[in-house]
Image 1 (tube, one colour):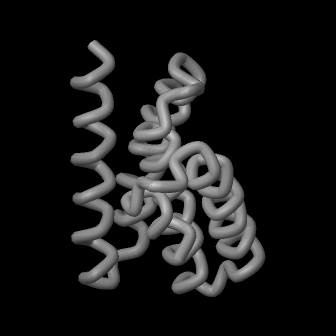
Image 2 (cartoon, one colour):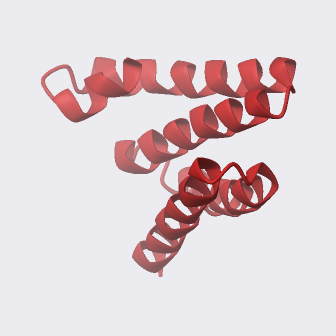
Length: 105
């Protein structure tokens, strides 16, 4: 079901973050890309669900940061910008929700 898929994506994202903080960027990206695939599918199915879009946008920023640590600055920047662009409409739709506003940095 959708909630189980969402939770699986969050688990992959958390595992990726753990590997990131241990400087294992290849494992980080394996988990981030697994989470990305799940969240992309959920986002296509539920395009108005800001929670899913927010998690996907955060993930793009994390992927970008990881790629940057691998000296892939061009792809890293593209991912960070994609994530930030995804956050802007979420923040506009939820101007009083600090959870979505903080995602804009």
